[in-house]
Length: 328
Image (tube, rainbow, N blue to C red; front, side, top):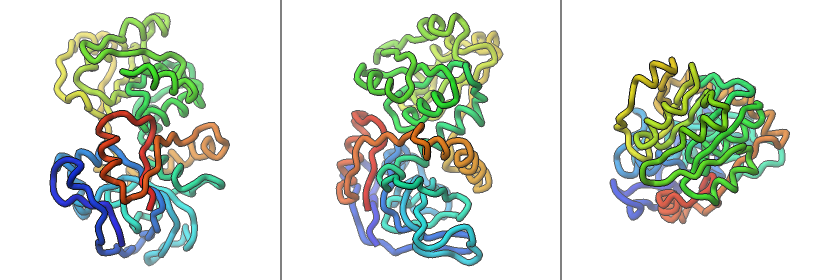
């Protein structure tokens, strides 16, 4: 089969489409004929050798989510049949013509949805739902501050927050992304400068002095101090990424006075049962919203897998809005 492969560790120049051995499903697993697999920043880190997959997965084949058709069933699988349209997060190797997934990690692709759209949903949707509700404890009417509103996770978070009746505040370094995010549920957009970012005072003003109950942070270090100054009493900062750096200097007194918390999250290395629980929670709470058209995948572009190098370049330039999807 064909798969996106890294010929070494480095920049986009190591990305290629190559022939590799097709996997076989084991007991409890399903073989999926992948039709679409979205890109994630984890792919860029894995390409550089900075984010290896869990044991048992190849370091040279990336991919954390997929959509396609069930091609074969491993022993004991009863929940699916060949030909079913499915989507899932994986621990790796999703950017290939065939991939395996545990049967309980699969979700049905909503009727009428294209594989390109479905391929953009699992990682962004699960991460957003898990961070805001399971970890953050977001409640209707509360404010959620979502940084980097043009990212795949953020575009999903905005829509889910709107459906839950939360007040969504978002930040971006470009005005265009803030404007595009308004159609997804952004109530208030804050333009943040690259040097000495400031947003806490405006978050306080927009929330009547209360602050944000949940903050989804993809930037890390440069935003840490302002995050604490933006936090509501008992609020939670959920760190999903550290695009700006991972070693902040903060005033812990602010955290103490707010009686808040800072929690990190990542899906990939979690035990299988935890990932199944996150998948099932997403299926229960968000999949009906997707089927009803209240939450939609946000796709920047769909490129053939042969253009995977170009996809890496585009994601690295941070010009995309929503997910970049590879078609197989």
